[in-house]
Length: 325
Image (cartoon, rainbow, N blue to C red; front, side, top):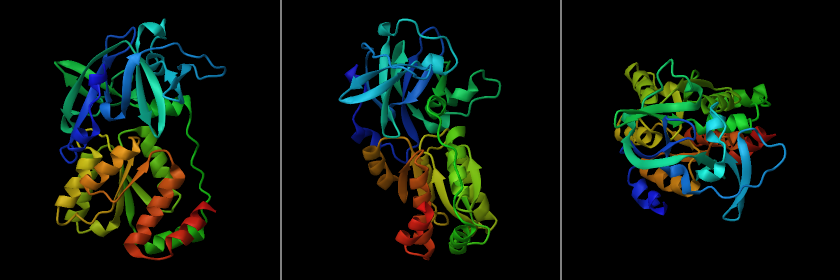
């Protein structure tokens, strides 16, 4: 089982190639084939004894000590509105890291790891029953693979705080005064409905208009369309998820850097992947900065600093103080 998880050096070589490695697995009492990005997986092991804690969410079946850290174990089938897993000790535990926290998912069988091009990963078709828990779909040997929206599951188990706009109109006016165009906008690209809403709401608290894109290719086409109309200066910057159908965030950033007209677009990668891995990928892709998902305060600070870096204005320390207060 240890051979399933490959080293990071080889994966970082995929930057700009629009490729990903995906773990294919099945859930108890379901025939469907599911997928999860290997980058997020720490290890796969037989499910050990779990400690049952009071007042856990119905999808969290217990906790365990994983390498010195207390981690929740999620019944993925139940979390996706499927049948409850009976005897979890019969199954496997996929330990993963999202947003700097470690958790396990119960799966019945691990099939294999497959190398995919992101242009083969598609948006879920309308009418798919559990579309709410999927970010994308693909095929493996003529079988449909449903890629799980882990962020959606986390948001139901531990709901993210609603974005509260405490910024003054004076502060928003100051931020807008530094933008390169009176109608400047920030593009937010993400295939997760939960993430794109929270990211967009965070940007709006700064008084800046948001354009939403559901994947990297859509974001790239929006930018190219603005450029073709001579309105590129209306795009202030891009906040992009990393894992997206058709064109991933790293490849999106790399594509912008290769285009003489678009190469100066400021790119913030917004991701739930591990920090060390992200730093390596960040430099290879040509993105300007990287922020962990669902840390709205840090995201807002990063956006403000990016605007100041691009256009001057208050010193970062002054504006960030205003933002926090």
